[in-house]
Image 1 (tube, rainbow, N blue to C red):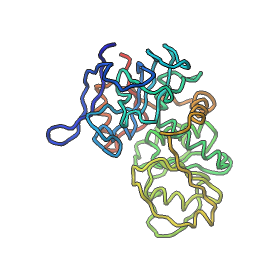
Image 2: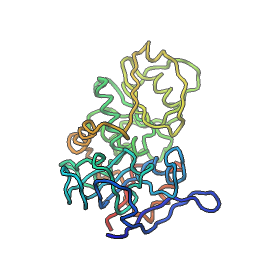
Image 3: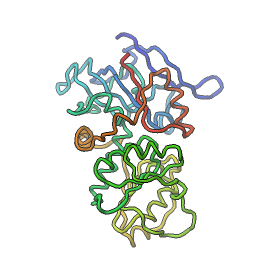
Image 4: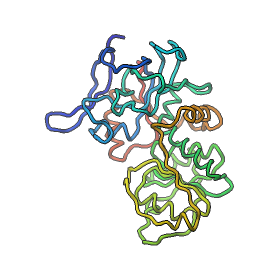
Length: 331
């Protein structure tokens, strides 16, 4: 337990960022009330950005990314958690500017930890990870906005990504008719197996007509990519519908008008999974462990080790990654 393995992102002598597996010492970890032996982590787009030197995500390098971790407590300095308790850590500063989950051990503040809910294994919690948690927060917003299965189709953009694929499977579990938008035609079979009723090409959600409003198509939209796709989603959502926004892989900015809001009464919800209040965080994880748990959960991931992680990061940055990738760390 004195030393352990971790992935480290670093800047080489040519000013390029690379990743390597290194040995670290427990005493090198940041201070915190909980020392956790990590069983699984998961790969998210933010991890790929951190691992490639994006200083908007991580300010100082070398650094160990990993915004997700699930494992067992080996040291606790607080009463509400004891040694042996299984816990989930997602969000907060884990893996951003704090030593992250791509490691055999992490040390974190106790108020970052969620006790593993009944009905969920550590591995399943990382099949969800931040992606599944974000998808669930988005679906919760649709429900709070009054969008019901009988109201019409739900569009999920970036449907082959982590958040998108999770949103498709959870929505299908809840009885919604889900349409997935993707640029990967070869992913049709995968998305249909997760419960999508149909697939459209992402170009259909990239309107350049200049029109303020378009034909209404969706009762709700879970947008994971931002940019003009989000603007198009707003213009094509039916009266009283809801759109959620959680990503910016296409672009961080977009141009729209007030007309979708004042003519169709559209509601746009922003989704933040990093600083979600703990009471709401616990409620969402409880749903993911029970009523919202997709029957397809065990079929929408791949498992890799730390050694294979740099290649997976490269695939994600190049847009070739699909679904969920979890990292097994308890070897």
